[in-house]
Picture 1 (cartoon, one colour):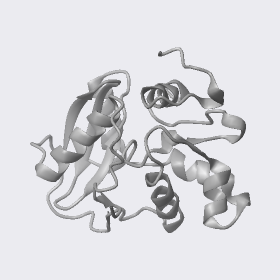
Picture 2 (picture 1 turned 180 degrees about the horizontal axis):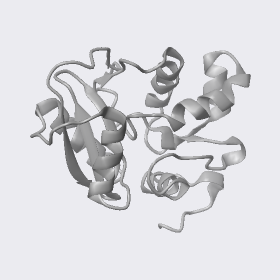
Picture 3 (picture 1 turned 90 degrees about the horizontal axis):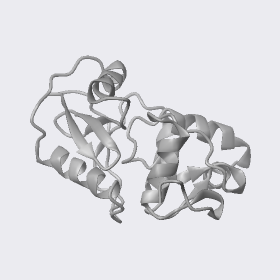
Length: 189
């Protein structure tokens, strides 16, 4: 399956909250692609507010079919499903080229698998880019469609996570997928 990348950031835009196994998420879209996804914050209102800080004002709307399919995919992943979500179109307007390259690599990591920041940096051609890879993933506006939670620090350490709940959310998402950094089962099992 391809990894659609769209560079429009135009046309009708909307957003919607939706429930997942780890709490309410929010998704934003334009006429052709997903603009952003926000993982759960302390409340549904806080989740929506954080998304709006990055997208600008959006009206709540009924998701069109491609957005509903993305929502169902995210819900499936949050229940331990094996979907990789690479079919979901993403609007990459305004996303730096380096970040796009990092996100493309991250999108190829299948549920239940992990890679390290160094692995991604090597694939980009320079192990010295590991810190930049981490920074790009920390600015990922599409989690978990771009599964930054599957990229770990060296030696199986979880590394950082910018989603609500921080590293604990990352560990919870990995546990749902049956993955435990460092080989130790999670507190969530």
